[in-house]
Length: 180
Image (cartoon, rainbow, N blue to C red; front, side, top):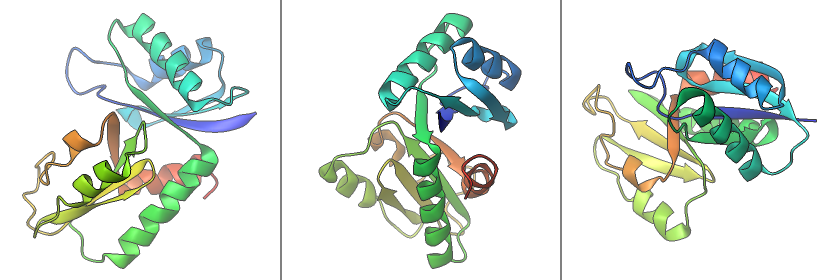
């Protein structure tokens, strides 16, 4: 069995896309996954599976979520080993960039092509910059970046299917579920 972490996109943001963590756990278990755990109510799920294909796992979960909720729930899956690497890179970037106002990690369904990565990383100015590492894109935002702005660098639209978590959630989940 392999341990995976799944991140659900665009849930619990309003009255129409409600998906409580207890329901997420129930649906993941009903889809045949084991050792299911959730963390806070933003769509963070840990589970074990014999399936080896990330794409197949994502498809299985997305179908189960849509059947249960009646709306699509894009899902991004990482093995625990992959997520440990994301957490390591997150710590490395945080240490190399002291004084950031915010550090968000966008978890990507697919790794961007080299040209797409160049476009994303070109979105740098005095508010901050983006750094892409595989299937993770880091928004490194400087003080005064316009706190509260959802995408101050205009890079999120270039990422494809993605969801973000702050650096604290990445660290907590890596420790709690990925053995980092």
